[in-house]
Image 1 (cartoon, rainbow over the protein chains, first blue to last red):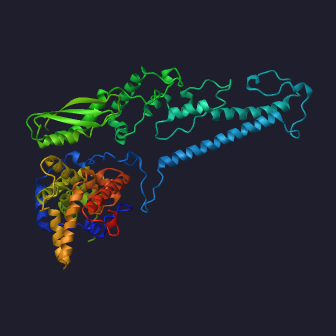
Image 2: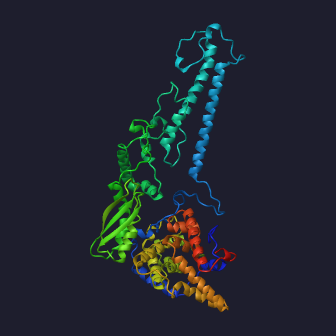
Length: 367
Length: 198
């Protein structure tokens, strides 16, 4: 059952001791009866939900990728690919092959325009020569009837292929799954496409470049960078969705006043949320702070259970969104419960912000 | 009658079978006590925490959703209760006393199993340094190491207890063992074949 894998070896004696640490023998039956006696007075449903929550904060240097998105190790110790990764690769592979097909079709169409196969089509009459080459802009130009049909029959598939190629070239790069780069990738695909720069192509917008079936208005907000897994969880939590959206909207409003990269569209509505180089809000929104503190407050209240008076705490958030320090005053000050409150409130997290730090007062009332 | 699984016992206890919960408790009582003893380093507190764990587990039976093993669910309650005790007393207590209850077991074990007094003494000293090294770890690393290294839980089971992915458990165990190894080496307990390396 012991799952050591490639952990550092402590030496045979230490390993043996660690894996079979003996416990002093006790009268277990007496202990069990004592517990059963207590169970008779116990009320079902009386246990605090906090005791059923995941204990312990992350280590400070714990790699976030490990805690957030690590792929599980198989029993043999081989790291497997995540489903997200597999899906992304599958989509990329499919779209790459489709683009390749479109390119090949375009090349064939171009060759057919320049060197029509002599065996399939009758030699063009002299009067038709000035109609070629086929151009999308001249597609509606008058064509001489009757004897021009073979040429038109050749041109139509070529046109259809060219249109298909145009469609696929304007299609964005595969939108990454669960990542925050969708708008930029789409924009990159539009600007890199040679067809998009042609006079035929309409000016591309982010809305057009967004993946089909997705409301482009939702993309920037959803794609806002969430580096910390804890924040990602908070953002994904349905109960805090409203607060998260509020923060994102606030971020966008504040970013609007900042200098914008010249390479981006002038219309703010067409720019991705972090188009100003990932600029952060000056400070966390009230809703975000309330949500963050609210999520840890019940734990803090436990610390002062039994106290008569409430305690106050000044919580200072660092620019990374983590709590830098907590100062407790009031009834719990100087007691062990102050340490407990500090530990509980230190678990609060908000979105990263631009200011060096941000402090907020919190009142911890006894339960 | 065949031995009932933990889940069957939980289901029966939910239905009002108090004996079922008693059976479940007796099955995991020692492990929970050992976990609490290693986390709290105090026999009386460990006993209280063990009692409290089962009382609270009984009180929360209706909220056991069956997504994890029953014993990892009980372990989580034990870890939370033990951490609450540790947080409440942190300013006052930190060091390991000579009467560390964890070493009591080591002494009894070596006396019974070995006729070599020098070996006993070395083992006792190793046990003491090992306990000190574990106490020097952060709560997060120490708890993870105790669950995996001492209690023998798999990374997946420890992940269920701690509410984190297997990869995180693996990383924490690796870090904890790395630090513990350095601690042991600094005190002259280098792994065999690495004496010169220290």
